[in-house]
Image 1 (cartoon, rainbow, N blue to C red):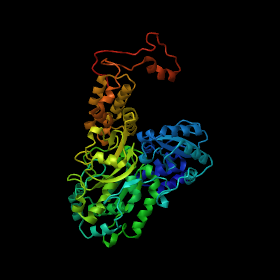
Image 2 (cartoon, one colour; image 1 turned 30 degrees about the vertical axis):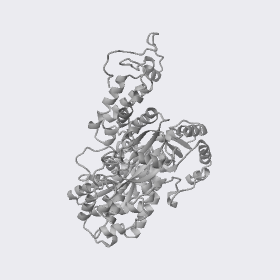
Image 3 (cartoon, rainbow, N blue to C red; image 1 turned 180 degrees about the vertical axis):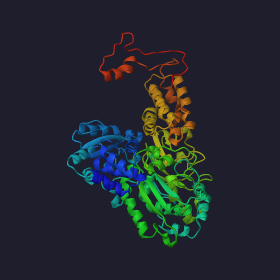
Image 4 (spheres, one colour; image 1 turned 135 degrees about the horizontal axis):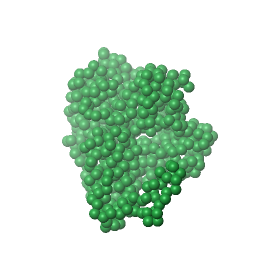
Length: 618
C-alpha cells in the first residue's frame, strides 16, 4: 500500500493544499480511506493524522469504512421522493437483502442515501461508482443488481437497462439536458469560441472591468452581488498573486442549470474565465466541480486541452505577450456548504469546508490568503457575451435592476421539467403555462433556502427586485402534503448539511424540525406555531454563512404563506402539550446497559401535560 499511496502523493507534488485530491484518489482505489493511508499521507505531508481524519469525516463521499465495490448513492431529495424514490429504494433492499446505509456481506454492493445530485428533472436518480443513473424503476433496479453480480462496469450497467449514453463520448452519461427554452446569451448557437477573448485583449484589463460594471451583471448564484464591482475590489487589492475560482458546486436541491451549462457551453465558460483572469490579473483559474458531477471531468479536461492547443490558454494567450493563464479542475467531495465562497476556498486548500469569518473578503484575502474572485458558471458565461456584444446590448434584456437572462431549473409537478433561459422580469403565471403546470398548490423559488409562494403570489416576477433566485423552481401540486413531503425534507437536508460551526445552525435547526414533527404528529398547539415562527428568525443574524441564515426558510415562508396548513394540524385547545414519554426516554440508556426499566403503572405510559406554560425550553 505504501508505494501506491506514495504515487498518489507525488502525483500532486506533496502539496498540502491538494489533500482533497489525494483523498478522493485513495477513496476511488480502495472504496474507502484505510488507516494506513491516513498514516502515510500525514507523515509525507508533515501534518497530523487528526488533520487528515477531520477532512475525511467532513465530506459525504469520503469514508473510513468500505462503501462497497459498487457504491450506490440514491438521491433522497423531496422531488425524488415525490416521483418514486421509495419504491426504488425498496427494490434495491429486496434484491440485495440489506437495508440502506450498509454493505452486503461479501462487500460487493453498498446502499447509501445521499442529498440532491442535480437530477431533479429526471428522478429517481442515483450515482453508482461515479456514474449517474436516471429515471430508475424497480425493474431497472433488478437488472442493475444482476449486472453488478456479473461484474460489469458502469457502461455495462447502462447497457443492462437499455440506457443510451447522451452527449459527447467522453461523458458516457445517460443524463439528459432537457433544454426546453434557449435564449440569446447563455444557450445560444451564436457563440464563436475565442472571438470575445480576442476582442478583450485589445483593451486594457481596467477597461474590461468597467465594461462588466456597466453591464449591470449581477452574480447568478442567488446573492446578486455586482460581478464588475467584485472584480474591481480584487484589482484594488494590488496583489502580486491573484486567483480566479469558478464555483460549479451547485448543491441547492432543485438546481441543475450548471450541469447543463457545463456540458452545453463549456467553451463559453472557459473563455469567460480567461477574460476574467485577464481583467483581474490572475494566472491561475480553478473550477470547483461538485463531486456529483464527477462524470463530466474527462469531457471538461478535453475542452481545456483543446483551448490550450488553440492558444486560448497557457502562455502569451492569443498572441498577447505576457498574458499567461491556465485552468485546472478541482473536485469537491460532497458538502452543500461548500457552495458558500469562503467554505469553497477552505475546501480548495484541502481542509474542512467551513465558512470563514468576514471581513476580510476573498477579493482581499482568499485562496492561499491571496486576492481571489469567486464567480459561478452562469456569471462567467455571461461575461463572454457582454464583451462580444457590448454592455448596452446585455442591458437590453431583463429589467433595470436585473440585466440579461437567467437559467431556471424547473422541476416537480409539471409536464415539461428542464432548463429554461428566460429574461429577468417574467411572471410566474407565464412560466407555469410554459411548463405545463396545473392544479398548483405552491412553488418553491430558489430551492429550500428560498421562498415558498402560494397561488395568490403567482403574478410576481422573477427578478432581483422581486423574486430573486439562483435558478431553482420546484412546482408542488395540490395532491402533495406540502409540510410533510417538502418542508420536513428540506429541514432534514439543512440539518445534515450544516458544518456545525455555528450553534444556532447546528442546534436550532434540529429544534425547529422536532417542533414541526410534533405538529405533524397531531400533538401541537397554536402556541407551537407561534413559537416556530418566532424562532425561525433567530439564526438569520447570528449564523456566519448563508446556510445557517436561511436554514429556517422552509418553515418561515410556509407559515407566512400557508399558515392554514399548520393550523389544520392542531387537534387541541390546550396551550401546551408535552411529548415526553418516560418509557421512550429511558429505552436507549437501558438497552445500552442491558437493564429492564422499572416503571410503575402510573408512569409507564405517562405523558406530562401542563397548562399555562408560555414555551418549551430550547
